[in-house]
Amino acid sequence: MDYNNYEVIDSESKIAELSRTFFANVYKYMFLALAVSGFVSWYASTQDWYLQMMFTETGLSPVGYITMFAPVGLVLLIQLRINKMSYSATLGLYLLYSILIGISLAFIFMIYTSSSIFLTFFVTAGAFGSMALLGYYTKTDLSKMGSLLYMVFIGMFIAGIANMFMGSDMISYVISFLGLIVFTGLTAYKMQEMKKIASEPALQGEDRKKQELLGGLILYILFINLFMSILRFVGDRG
Image (cartoon, rainbow, N blue to C red):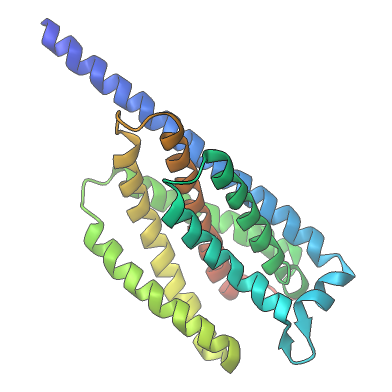
């Protein structure tokens, strides 16, 4: 084996190590957010102030609407300003996002049994993990599929907002069914997209840390949405 071959092997080894470290940190951020949201959600569901703060006799309270929609604004802020914000500020917004999601989802502990929630979590973890591995190892370009799924997701989001006022169970089930397809597909697509970022040697320092955090945020959002879609179908009401 000549010198040039050793250089190629060394370069490939460094890229592989960069990728492993990148994804280890991505999953660290994802699991951190899941832990924060899970604890906040459970704790809020045990408090009397939660129902008083989030709901009125006719539906969501003003605070409830703010809590439901504030995470959307935070995600947009993080994605649009991540290159201009410091890592500490980005992490702070990320933790705030996970807390708000936890508060907004506390109602599931009041509707579904704890056993079905935990079962759904493990089912979601299995489906999510399978699609993440598929996206990481597949050689097929998933960009076209990703674009299509994003369009479907936008339609689901708009329909979901409209259904908050309509209260149609049929629309809710259709959105949940589409969610099973959209969020599993987007998981594979995003993993393939992040694999390219992870193996970029020029991405270093704080910029790399922020991209790892952004990756954790994206996977966290996909996991939560997939979890809610599955829970709609398999969750046992208490």
